Amino acid sequence: MELDNWHQLREFTNARIALGRAGNALPTNEVLQLRMAHALAKDAISTELDVLNIKADAKNIGLTTIFAQSQIANTSEYLRNPNKGRLLHDQSSTQLDDYPKKKADLCIIIADGLSAEAVNLHAMKLIELLIPKLKIKNLAPIVIVKYGRVAISDEIGELLDAKIALILIGERPGLSSPTSMGAYITWNPKKGNTDEKRNCVSNIQPDGLSYEFAAQKLAYLLEQMISRQISGVALKDDFTDYYLEE
Image (cartoon, rainbow, N blue to C red; front, side, top):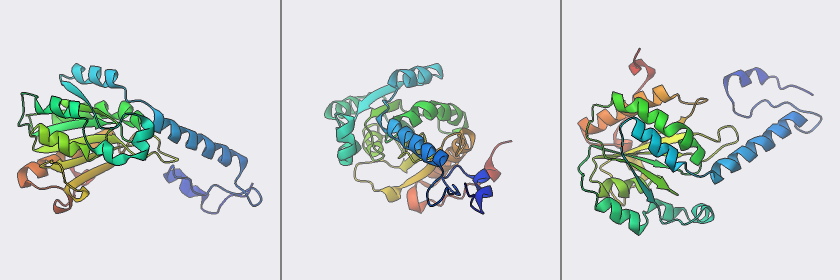
């Protein structure tokens, strides 16, 4: 096998770089690793949202939860028709509209996205670190959404009359990151918002952005949104590790 001259860079990333060559092909070990990574990515998409454990973990830290579903009925439809994943099922919409305690400062949503395993692993661990850092005290119940896309946070936030919607969602699995979670925050969530209204903290996972860094950054962005009443491209993200607590 012939190594690439820049194979030392592999020490700094889990991206598939400097794989070497065996003749005019990839080395056998790298081909097998690629097939394994592809299988893990497919598994991530088909994994189910672990609603019971998420509810139990939320209850353990004193948070209430509501289960909701988008207009999607199954995984196949979810992959073929993403627009319906951005809208609540009528029954869930009515349930949230009838919820008695509204006017929250923040509504946290957990949705499967394209990697349910990502939120199964990371969502509650991040929330447990985030809550103590918030100056916001009026929280809506955590809404757990099956077959949800990012924009469904607008409808949920609007129904709960929340000032800010924060959705934690499984990101599209890559060949080196099948369980990466993203967080999208929107000031004044309402149906019809576009992506330029959101701030995103991406690649939350042990091999990416740590829970602690992500929690600090989210707390910083939420504080900025509350004080300036803006989000998305209007809110410059100037958070650095300088702000990390000792």
